[in-house]
Amino acid sequence: MKIVIIGGVAAGAKAAAKIKRLLPDSKVEIYTDDTHVSYSSCGLPYYIEGNFTDYRALLVRSVEEFKASGIDVYLESKVEKILVPHQQVLVCTKTDAKLVNYDRLIIATGARPFIPKINGYENFDNIYTVRKIEDGINIREKMLKSKHATIIGSGFIGLELLEAFVKNGLEVDVIEKNDRLISAFDADMSDIIRNRLEAYTPSTFRFHTSEIVSEFIGENRQANIVKTLSGKEFKTDLIIISSGVRPNSEIAKDAGIFIGETGAIRVNKLMQTSVSNIYACGDCCEEKHLISGKYVWVPLGSTANKEGRCAAMNAAGFYNEFEGVLGSAVSRCLNTTMSMTGLTEKEALEFGYNTVTATVSKPDMVSYMPDVGDITLKVVADKATGLLLGGQAVGSIGADKRINTLATALLGHLTVNEFNNHDLTYAPPYSTTIDP
Image (cartoon, rainbow, N blue to C red; front, top):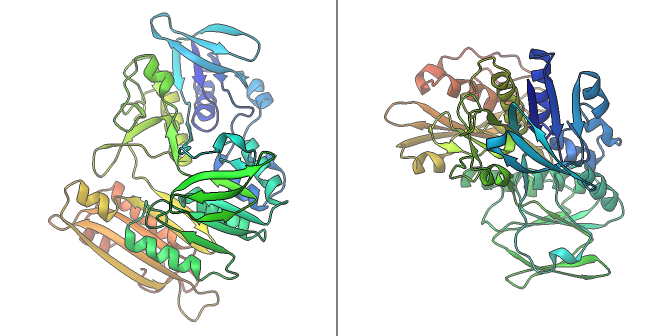
């Protein structure tokens, strides 16, 4: 059997390795338009910050290591077209093009940064997005020569880069089109995030919400002014566009594969697309939400790896199901951990639930312990049934552990009363006697 995989960062690389373990005699090929394969893009902000200085620490597996296990990797090789009736893909490089046959095909084309329409974007070299290894290398090199950075967008990546720049002594302006930071959270939790961050010292950064960037101005290929629709201007040395991502689903759509309302590839529990011998996994496909039952698009590295494994098993003939996602996520910025799982209160209301919420702020450990911090935890439930729907936590590093516990409860479809009897661990360095 010959299995071709399009894309090789997280989901694609995971799928290839799993298939080769399941079917040692199979022929497995990865085609990617990237210059690297199998790396942690989630680690890029931490490389930029300087937590480690060799970008190769981000590489999970090299082309040579794949080759040694019998997997052929073709870098800078873009699959331009899927010829479904012929079970072939058209692969193009800088020098040639060829048709490649497959018995099973796995699409793991990932996502790409969303670039808003901003005048002057194409004219400058110091405007960056964060997706590939080269992005991290280029941003770090520019950062070390800069005094000021402007970040457009305040999602997880934007705030992780804020930390990186502040810790390297830069002044930073964060420009957000919404009326609050990190709008994936409910408004009350976003306010807590902003208040915590603005209390951080040294305060070398500023947030500007309800502002839309309209133009970049500069000379000699270097933008030095960011202008907004309201007329504000920000002088800068380095610009990051962190306005979200979009699924790379065009090649599937062109092949007649069904695309969901989210714009990502629709798959079933086996990671099959609408074409039975073509699978999709990772940031290019949508999944069912385990609470709402609706199709959602939640591009996360953890999900990509699980989906890659599931797609591999089914493509190789070993039955496996991927039930869906809760959207569990965590990030850190300047001593503030932000974590969430399931539905927010806003989402629950939109899906028709009669919601009830509880929010509590407590120390993360017994108050007499050194380095005690605090956590604000918000839990969302259905008022009629008591079913847990989701939660968000903001505060010290232990916030993510509370959300992980809640995520397990959501997976088990527990009610509030059932969860109340959860037998959690306790010791003074880890929690209060009654955990938040």
